[in-house]
Image (cartoon, rainbow, N blue to C red; front, side, top):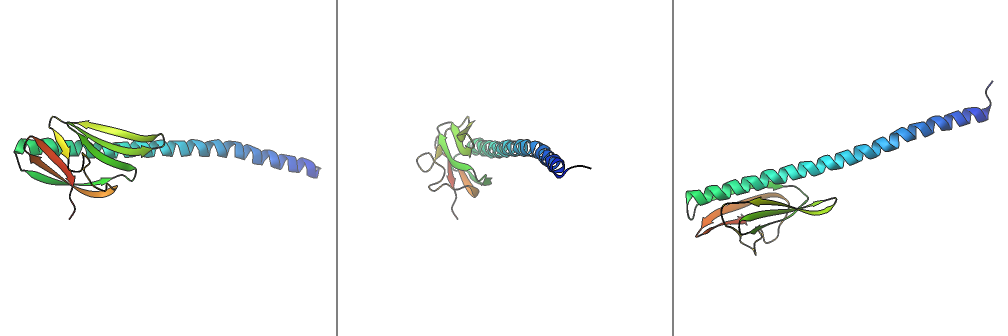
Length: 144
């Protein structure tokens, strides 16, 4: 017949083994889901940036004063979108800090608000007006 102490020790051993499996497994799952989320956000931003650049180059090819409106849904971690001559820069937050995705264009690009595309940038749904002007293409949030 087993003593009560032996049963208690065996019970604690089983609980300890279960925790030794569950805790590291939970940590690995959490890390994996964080990495997957960052990759998803980077993929969305990459798609949005390429779409904007394609439309910028298309408006320049069509000619002066042509314009189009893009409807985009920026991920929640997006902090700002700005331009720098021939570059479109999208800033977004990751666990490591602010990250920049830079998209290059063959066309001179200008934001309407000190190189930013919006006066008060916000993530989420946004309409972006892309307009060909004299010597450059303007990108701005369309508020209406």
